[in-house]
Image (cartoon, rainbow, N blue to C red; front, side):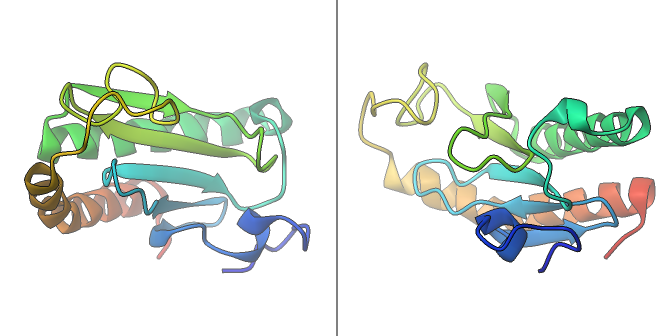
Length: 151
């Protein structure tokens, strides 16, 4: 995917940034490839902006609606202990939100996913979780299409 207004040196302007689940006019939703946290999704703004406050009020409202839809899909299918939301942008200053399903037995709990591991990951549990992600992707696609259209 090429953003319509982007910076050639920005990885989120050049590429989807993961497995694209859905794309609309303003943003896309991808599933990141994280071995310890397979239910790790990102909402990536299409245009190259650095901060949430750079968006219009209407775009901010749409972004929040989409974040809620991602959270709802993860909760409905996976029943995680917690959903983590983060918009850091320290490494890639392109507006994107992390939406991560978390469980008390994941490798980093109770710390953030970027902190040192607290324990080894449970390969069997992670494989079982990965097998459920296509259902999350489909539910998420349906929710986003109903609200925003897109592809």
